[in-house]
Image (cartoon, rainbow, N blue to C red; front, side):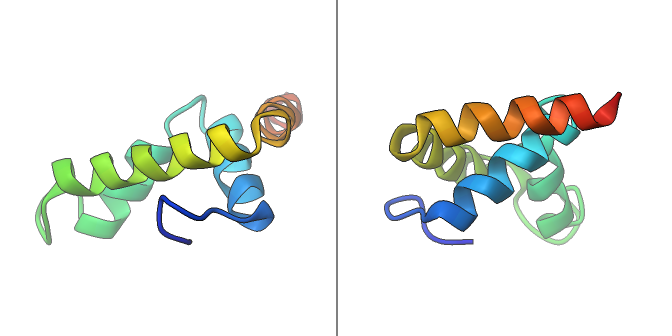
Length: 77
């Protein structure tokens, strides 16, 4: 995905769908997978980066982010 400063529509869809499908744990899971849950890298730094990316996406595409999370949550049912 893109850096926190310049998310695009596909980033917004990816982050919002992952958040919706994982009960809001998408950022924690992404950071964990990137760092082997702390064994292969710094989980805290990766989590901070994922959260910054998520915030950038939500700020730039608020309705798409909300709709993506809502749609993904509905698909879980």
